[in-house]
Image 1: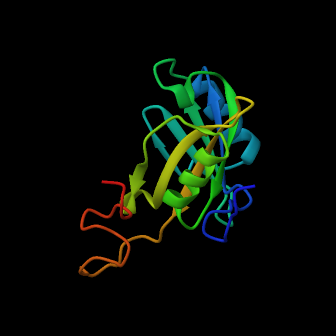
Image 2: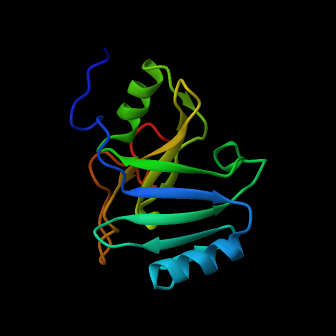
Length: 151
């Protein structure tokens, strides 16, 4: 067994993604189901904030992107140290599907994996939004906001 510490052990999912074929139809259905408008949206994704840090996201299926190539549910697990958690996952036999994405302006970093049985999931490292006043870099982050080693 590969040891885990608090920084690399995933918590309960804080994000659930649903890869869909028809984003417009899914938006209408889930807007009615949740009784609320989406909190945020882009050209190929829609997010619903379900409170308490729980995000439900609709993602348009895209065969060119391995993380969105099939219609499916996929959870996102929060960790405190995404780099160390990634290394631990690779040691456990998971396959990394994407490079690290995100940054302070997105509220965190994320990366997709496939477990040894083929299930796709995401690791996330939530980070608080940048302070309102300019600050000189944070410990453990480079000047461009990426955690050390993600450049």
